[in-house]
Image (cartoon, rainbow, N blue to C red; front, side):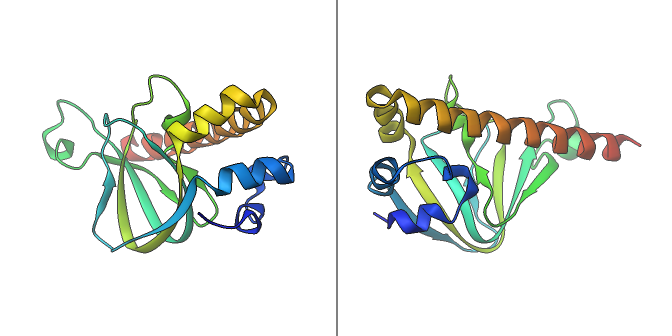
Length: 154
């Protein structure tokens, strides 16, 4: 568990009330990762919503059929402190769409997505706010990915 004050540091949670922040804080924890680790892989079940506290996480997409990219994939973005990732944990079919590599020692806020989705069933306003924020993050990530892919093919 983390404190609700910790969540308040993220604009993502800016529209939540004190009770909602407390509920989410109870299903959240901080985790550390060493540089060079793989946090998760594309196509795995998405069970955690993450926010980067410090460090750097790189996202890669697998490109099937391209020999040089088959093992690691193509870089499609970098997660910076304060940004959410693993948002697939909130969107059916709850499968990760990228692989996350820890490029330097990092600390993350990890929210249990199954427990969060259970909170959504009790609090529809919470569901709407968090899902809306996830959609905004997905659109921003899609735009950044388009830029990265265009640069890679030019």
